[in-house]
Image 1 (cartoon, rainbow, N blue to C red):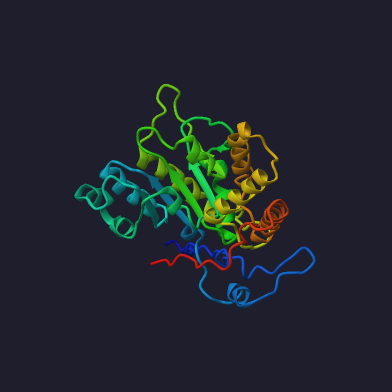
Image 2 (image 1 turned 135 degrees about the horizontal axis):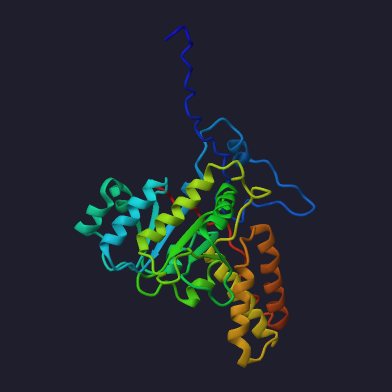
Length: 310
């Protein structure tokens, strides 16, 4: 009108994620401080024109012993709202309930595809970065807000790691022992008069902060794309180091529990790359061989099969 040119509306740009690294394994990790990593087929695929994968596909939400079917269904809806699809239920009170399907609404696919696990260890088997949740500060567990931790979580996923976001029971959350298995814990700030959040609300708030951060330019992979130690093999490494301490008589039996907890904290101080883990396995094996040549301990894992995604 009036001879003015109609402004052109620029379509919203689609997010383009960096290509992700291969799943964690030991057999193909041939890099060393003196020998650079080979560029194999995995690297070629990562730099090809193939479709890239959102880092949110490498993040799984884990609910520990959820009781209410409505909470499970609402969690599915909250996850799908913000681009998450992976859910694991640890020893749930119900697995298929009309109320869960009702609350999930259009996120019924997330509910149907959820993994049901008997134990937390089973749920975390392939995780390389475990993030717990807590309503209060815990002993020897680093705590951040979801907004503070979002970029760290995304960086690990973009580096090829598998992230587990672990939410505790509706009535009393995660135990201290369960939190000690986590690299990090999240705490959602609330009014001091009443700090108890509904389970699905807590999931929604955490998912929102990670989703929001995923659009930031600062959402980048950590330094070098690498392969990471899974929770399953972290437990094996902890056992081997503990056995080495026992065989070397490096601790008094009265201090065994404290040594064990310290080992757990050292191995969960941050995600570990498999090239570094080899050194610790070699140390544990050598120490056990010196103390008892007939029982040198376990070797590091060889090429565990990645979990198939449906």
